[in-house]
Image (cartoon, rainbow, N blue to C red):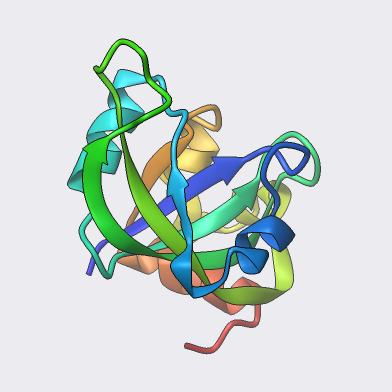
Length: 139
């Protein structure tokens, strides 16, 4: 299993909305960065991703699971970008802020720390474990 982080502005798509989507989940559309597109294309069904509230909060608030593989993004008129489908798995009991992550030496190389604008990014397994510990998440 690979680990990822997906970002959303809560005013556009919040964790509460993700949870409300239920088991059917939702298409993760709207990615228009070519590096983030490559990350989406690398996601496999069953992979997990942190759900990060960007701009407001700047914190990891949940975990989603990829439930459908990379496919064309129906919101992209150019036909160059794709999407995956995700569903909510777990809320993070204690949201993990960007400041919390920056304070962790084991997360110094995390993409979120070094390129916080990237909307879809890989997370190394040791970073995943640290963030889960910080969030008091037992999986």
